[in-house]
Length: 123
Image (cartoon, rainbow, N blue to C red; front, side, top):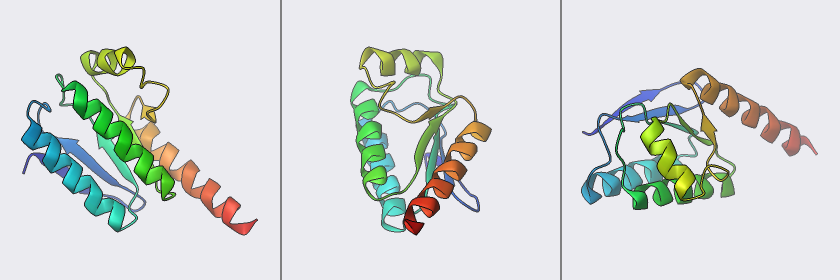
């Protein structure tokens, strides 16, 4: 498997063990993420190991995040390497993606979104 998966109480952390350098890896990632969408699991994608990433993969990550938020499920990307962040900015996705600098801040975002959903549910 090309991903490290760490299940926490409120979310699952998915960390690619290397770069997104092939379409096969991107397809595997997409399939893996969709399995968590079906189970309504909040996701944090940690990109600390991804120094290089294909441009289409950035767009796929943005589309996956959109799918999660359409179903009221959190999706946060964290620990993005500068080369990948540059590509995100080049594609004007830095305002679209829910990006946290650290794993801890990603966890905080998931918790805040959970509280927000609970409050909105009560209205």
